[in-house]
Structures are given as structure tokens and as C-alpha cells.
Image (cartoon, helix red, strand yellow):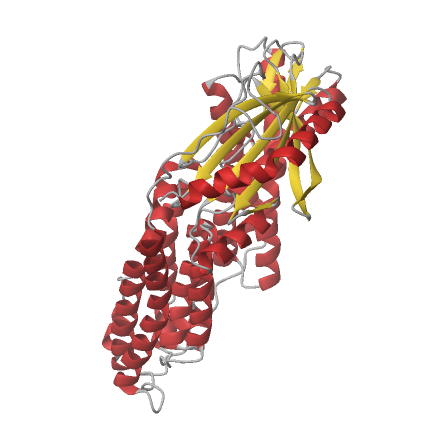
Length: 520
């Protein structure tokens, strides 16, 4: 925010707090540069978040619009905000311990926002409240809703086709109509439309309404409308292709029609919203030169507050860096599954359909297939050490079936309680169908998924994150493994086979993982 209005530069009460605040912001950007680099990298790589590049310029422009109002205010540093900044810095540290990038990015942006009331006081921050909160749009957040929105899009599209009288056969996010096969992938979820619409809709509401109620209503419309519009778009694309014999609305046309339709919807939303626009508030009456800094602070006080804030926000990055140096980042020397387990399960003659889940850059990957009287079970271990943005044990990028996997599909998911070492572990389960020959499933797998962290098994993602944080706080490192067990057959038979293998071998498997953790 280097574009400082002349009104503020000329006013001596503003000069010292502004310089001290800019120094604090520069220090924040330097200390949290890893978080900033991750954010900008996502903006650059992902079309879903390309709009984030506009957030800072738009924020600066909105601040500039308030220059007359700001010039009439007196900066008043308020040390009480340091407590909130300290809490956010600790939240950033906690997010860094468990490698939750979105939480770390929200904490960093919130630190930038709170530096304003800390250095200039709440009246100044209140005058800039929306531009400051607008900075949260810079956080690339929301991809976790992609699977849910894909499911909704598939549900609505299939329902609309059936209501139109077109027969549909569906498996998961894939469906067949008489004119061809269709699949709802991540690009069809509507998340891109949702993110862009909510940002520009919020900006429109701020610029055109003074009533908080009108702003809130329009922002809710900007949030809901692209979801519904995406459902309509998906149905229209399928119908256009169906009615034209697959000559239009396929390939590049599919994407082009989607963006054209979205542009029309946003234009209509703005046209309707403009009917209730309210005039801008009148500029504040000139009160001459604002009063000086609050009594007891003065110029030295502003720098003292900036220094105190710097110490608070620098401690967490230093702590995390020291912890990472102590843990090291060397990859495990070797992770190998045995040819046979002491329980009698052996890989001799064992075979299952090839099943390759999608993992987020594990340090080591090990697979094996074992058989016994109870049946045949496949084992896949994804071991993680030195976790970062790309390599994460708990990540939405770790999927049983990739979004564009043309062979496997997941029609049903569920959960199961497994007793391990006297503890109940609620793990996730899924039925996976092989679509290799059209939509006739040749193979059916049941897959169980659980985590191994610090010598114990856990089931859910949140539980795994908490276990990771506790392990690192104890000085045990960030090592962990994603354990997949799968068997072929109908759900009941496959479930019994997996249960037998888990009861017999999870203890020995934990020993294998523990040896890997200790091999540095």
C-alpha cells in the first residue's frame, strides 16, 4: 500500500504512524514470505483463483477513495490490538505445524488487517473496514467444496434430464444418455464462477449501497446465483449436445458457452442490483488539520508499538523454522512391505485389479497384495516426511480416485469403526467400481483408509491434523503415513476379508512404519 494520499503525507500527525506501519508491513511480508509465496503461486497456477491478482489493486483504489475522510481523522495507536495480533500469530504457527495452508494464509492476511487499528486506531480502521476485509479475497480458499458442488451439479443435471424425458444411467459423477457419455469433473463444479461472482458482487454492493442490509442481501445473491446458474449451464450444455447430435456444446464450445452464459448472468445481476443503488455518503466537512497523536504516544510511541508488534509476529516464524531445522527433511531410507506376515498372509499367488490412488507427492510409496484363507487384500502405504505445500499427509489432493480417472468411479462412501490396540478408530470406507468396459462394472473394490501418526492409527482428517500437531510439539517430527487396504467382491464379503487382515496385521504394519520413522 505504497500509494499514500498527499493529504495524509502532508499531515504531520500521519507521517510517523504511516512510516512505522509501512516498516511493520514490510517486516511481515519478509517474515511470512513462505506463506505469501504459496498464495501467489496458487494464483498463478490455478485459473480458479486468477482473480486474486486484482485484490490488492482494488483495495488500494478503495483506500484512495476514502482519502478525504481519512485526512479528517487523527491516527491513534492502540496497543490493545497487539493481543489479537499475538493470537493470530499463534494460529499461524498452529496451522504451520499441521501444514494447513488456508488457515496460515487467513492468519497472515488477518495480521495485515489488524496492523491498521493497532497503528492508526479503530476510527481509521472502521473507515476502511470493507477495503481491509476485502483483502481476505486474496486467500485462495474454497476448493474443498469442489466434490460437493460436483455432486450437486450431477444431481440437478441428471434430474433435469429425466424430467425432460431423457433416460439416464448414472454411476457417481458419470452418466450416459442415448446420445453419449458425460462426466461432471472439477471444472464443471462451478467453483470458478462462485469465487469470481462473490468477489465482484461484494465490491458492487460496497460501491452501490450504504445500507448494510442491502449489501448483505446482494452479497448473498452473488453467492447463490452462480451455483444455480451453473446447474442451468450444465443442463443446457448437455441438451444442446444431445439435440445437435453432439455437433455443438462439446470440446472448446463447452467451456466457451459456459463463460458466455456466466457473463450474461453477472451482467443481469448488476443491472437488477443497480435499480436499488444508493448515492454515496457526502464527504465529511473540512475540520482543518487533524489533531496530533494521542497523548502519551507521540512519534516515539508509534515506533514503540510497531517494534512490539514486530516482536510478537516474528516469534512464530522463528519457532517454526527452528523446529523444521531440528526435524530435518531427509527422505526415509527405505519403506518395504514384507513378502509374508507372521500371521500367515503371504504375497504368493496373490493378485488384485490394478488400483492406483492419487497421492500428494509422498516421500515413499509402498504397495503389496496378500492372500490367506480369508481372501486377498491389497495394501498401499504413502509415507510422508518433511511436509510442505506439495507433500502433505492430510490433503484434498490425496484421493482414492482422481477427478479425471476414466477407469474407476466411487458410487458410495461410508465409515467403519475398527478396533486397534483396544482403541476404536473410525475410518473411511468406499466402494470403487471398475468402468473399463462402458458402465458395466467388471471389478468392485472396497477400500478402507486410515492414518498412522506417531505410532498410532487415527481415522478422520481433523483427528489426523491434531495428532500431527501433538507429535511435532513433542519433538517427534512430522512423519506420518496414509494406509489403504482394499479387497475385491461385494461389500459384505470384502468387508469380512479386510477385517480379517486388519485384525491380524495392523500391529505388524505399525512396526514396519515405526522402523521407517526411526531410519533417518
